[in-house]
Length: 287
Image (cartoon, rainbow, N blue to C red; front, top):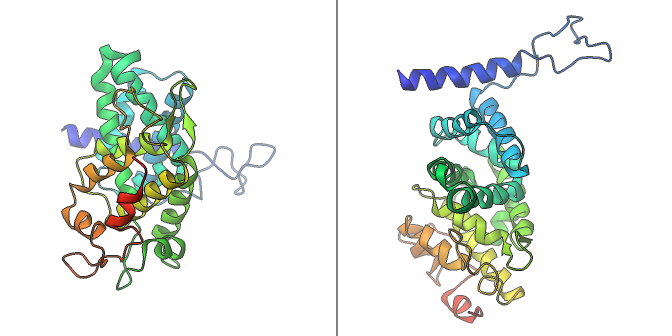
């Protein structure tokens, strides 16, 4: 009965969204000349509407706006009910953006450990849900032998929505990841928070995303020495060293970890990316 009730809630959200005419003119009429007409541009998946509703709640959480207990419960429900649904995950992540996802991680962490400890379970559940849907960072369909991580990120998969989402999100993460957030006296950087979000998930992340993120983290530390050791220390619940944190995430995907450290660029299946990052590169990073 609980599963049916939660499915009904998702349908209710979708119907409420499509019941609004998105094509009204200045007089409040839709293109079909009806008042408050049905939205002709409705999306096909209920999960898309749920993700947009979740994004709206998350945005209010980030801004310190009015968020009721029912709102928190609804976001938690939508996370649970859509676990493994790529349409939900990518719509939510794309709408919130890398910066918003990072802010949500920091806000939930603060609520769980500091500002609202009496409701700690609420925030911990949402931390897990956010991490689970971070799994939506999937490059999408493969087209044969995987190309080097840097080439693959730029080229993506022509004509595939997964490829477009992947390129846009990872490019945005590259910018947000090196920005300082939080207290100026003891700042965090985006990568530390994002990797901490990933650690809350109990599912495997896409190996190509892990490769690309690992490459980007090492590149960031080379360009900004000490970014993961000088920033963020003392922030409970946040991984100070984002590279160490990513390796922890990789431990849930042994094949990806093997390929990441394989200097020949071939994992056990013989189809892993030839990495620009090698063990030598890791050793050269300032620690």
